[in-house]
Image 1 (cartoon, rainbow, N blue to C red):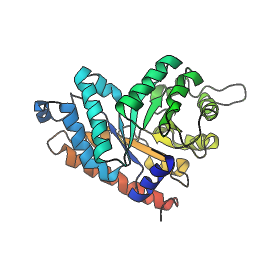
Image 2: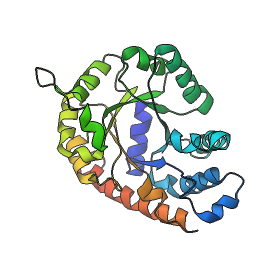
Image 3: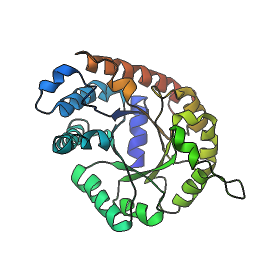
Amino acid sequence: MKRENLIENIKAKGSFLCVGLDPDIKKIPEYLLREENPLLAFCKAIVDATAPYCVAYKPNLAFFESMGVEGWIALEEIVKYIKEKYPDQFVIADAKRGDIGNTSKLYARGVFEQLGADAITVAPYMGEDSVTPFLEYPGKWVILLALTSNKGSHDFQLISDKDGRRLFEHVIATSQRWAGNDAMMYVVGATQGEMFRDIRAVAPDSFLLVPGVGAQGGSLEAVARYGMTSDCGLLVNSSRGIIYASAGEDFADAAAREASKLRDQMAELLKEHGVTE
């Protein structure tokens, strides 16, 4: 998907919501366990319920891989389902890959050619040759981990050099030589608050994938205040707060309600920041 298509969809829907597909076999409604593929049944219901309110889906590969072959089949089928029924949705494979070049080439082939995702999350620790194989696919995106929302992010990401530049700033500045803002995004956790200003100082026009709103306590208003651009420039992800809004048979309706609430907040923020009228 091209950058302009993503921006058009954000403006048309008044939403920059990404729904995280994290289907845990121990958390999905019990009655779905009678289905031939419970993970797939759960994800299809979530997608059908939330598609009007979001512009992206982010299946987290760990939740599917933990179920072996059945899980991988569910992953392939849900991506195919989204692509066929909701082709305007941006699909992110949350895989956090990052390895030597030859291995990265195969990871890229698997996610982009076999799975058909639009984007993949990648860890930058091994440097340029571990990332560039993912950039060889026109119209596909790399979403590089920059400043994450977990507690341990401060162990490395905030380390400063002698000039005071922090590691996450080095990652962003260096990686922008590998690709432009039509192929590279960055993961920045919603819990980072005002540090979005520092991100925007290094990457003023890049899209940011922002986890941590909702269950992890990040503020949507703060993310928009410090991170939104004239084209929005944000994809804010919510996973548990939407897909596990109910553990009962009304789980899809509950997911739709939560997604709709977030979409309404986002529509107001887009107007407030001049992205939409």
